[in-house]
Amino acid sequence: MSSFFRAMACVLLLGSCGGGSSEFSAPRNLDDACSIVSERPEYLRAFRAVERRYGVPVPSLMAIIYQESKFIGNNRTPHRYALGVIPVGRQSSAFGYSQALDGTWEEYRQGPGGSRARRDDINDATDFMGWYMTQTVAETGVPINDTRNQYLAYHDGRTGFKRGTWRSKSWLVRIAGEVEGRAVMYDQQLRSCRKR
Image 1: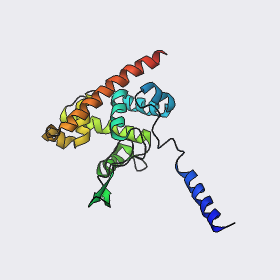
Image 2: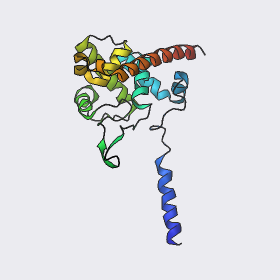
Image 3: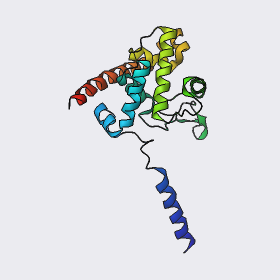
Image 4: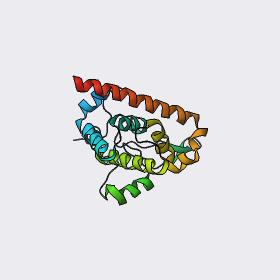
């Protein structure tokens, strides 16, 4: 076999290894909660476990995950570029469904998550979110079902939220409103798909 054909076979073999896992791809219809949980029933089990353990409403979890990662398990922040072309690293260490930062994730792993917790695992990522949001309730008084303010505290951190850093970020205030609206939409959809 010629070296050209061997090289092509290697390329095809490597290419076929990369993209089939639904664990890291987004569900097909992100605007339909019923479709999401029908396509990925493991998501709904994870969401319900967090709702039982921490009291976080399923629609709020779904809306925040949508905003943070679009339900892509291995999602990362974009690269930064020097001079517009030289990659100099990622915008932050955020990774996975929950886009948890390295430091916060380590805090979770040393606590309730355990050393085997992974940000690209839907069960661990949603449990992290429930844990984080209950910490937000304790530190800021934001109710667990206040999706808008929970998202602001999730994005800017609890210290930033208490300092009001989000007030100078009109884009973040707008996005927090969109997250809240998506949670309402998901809630209505989930109620209707239960009736089907």
